[in-house]
Image (cartoon, rainbow, N blue to C red; front, side, top):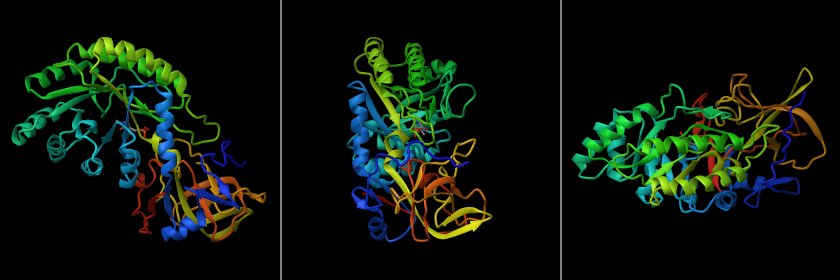
Length: 411
Ligand SMILES: *Cc1c(COP(=O)(O)O)cnc(C)c1O
């Protein structure tokens, strides 16, 4: 049985004379310009368009943050920084990239379990908000603040007492390495007050890759209710409430794009209530990673060999799981499914066959497309993996087997 994505070819990219266009550039010409395959290409027009679409869909006043770990390429972050309201970082290196964009430190936050003392000091020195995920971080913040003579902005990441249904990856509820259990938060807030730290607000993130809007609205209802309960214990008024993100993108056959309309209507209702209960100074923040970047990016590799094995067509490429772990199905998928893949140099071809695209690694896991219907391709043709703008390059084990690294370009 062949597995063919229903949304193929991906409509955000056009093609001309049988070749995919990326930022208006025919794929072969782009490959020549890059100077090597494999490479990742991100389309800046699509990135801008995605932010515009979100702004137009969500109620005015909702702030958008970019969770940089989805795509920390400096050029991408530079492009997005002036379009969004803030950046969320998860490491010191991401913090440096974020600060390089000139974003106001007040609009940069740092989350992640297991922050080191050096990272905490850097966050305080930079004047960004640290989302604490453990009681252990509090005295370190106070120490850094005293030594540097800079107030320490702190928000509390809460591990909620509920779970987000339908999330591809749960990051809240039950026992978690993320955040502080909701029932412990009042005590933590008291300590923040005692230590004279500059309390900013709450960060409540429940899970990732959700395509069901009713699951997201239900989570938002629970997040606001929890925030109101916890705010009663806050040492000072909240300057922001970060309600997480979790907006998913369609990757697999049958996946439907997230319907923003019910989420927006529900948020508008909450916005009015939040302004009453938390005060007009409290900004409402949504932080998104993949939703902002995934669909703007492609991964491109080159076919080296067309091999027939017992009746099956294997297209052997110079790219694979070492560059794109997610497309190989090894980044959070439980059952491997094909990402949308096409032969970017044979777009619209009527000569279709069932083929698999494999990589050069010595493991059967190195599979970019499993028995998909693809245009008949030869050595030299270019394979395109769509939906690759998030968790591609930076989420992959690039040293495995010591092949060349892919290059990244923003076009
Ligand atoms: C990873 C992460 C995100 C981004 O998740 P996406 O699924 O890419 O939107 C947002 N917030 C936090 C705290 C994260 O850890």
